[in-house]
Length: 177
Image (tube, rainbow, N blue to C red):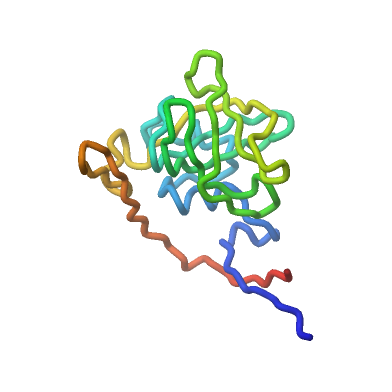
């Protein structure tokens, strides 16, 4: 019986063998920042609006800590409540893995999104660590008018993604399952 192999494409930045959070967040959010995740917050100053309020399409910027010295970035895919969002991110629960619409909960005492707990696959629930955040980087200024188009329908705001991805630097790599 022949072994089943699935082919996938990974960004050139991930040639080390695993997809990192940075190229994935850049691709899904449209925020054109390069370098390790812990540098994104400061790099965004003057280029992108930043704030403490989660918005669909915004990049959640995690501070570097001892167990996560390079920081982390993830894109907010849905607002669930004033203290809960869903995220899209890579390289969190397993090396190179992509997670779509996983929970992140604001656990800060002030309810200001300065600390979050994030869904962690190996335990099938929110992780035990409260991760400190820098805040949120908004992809197209304050209103997100270009890549994330807000539409009013029935009194509710709906957000429609319209990302254009440059795939010219993608290189196929083989995964053995």
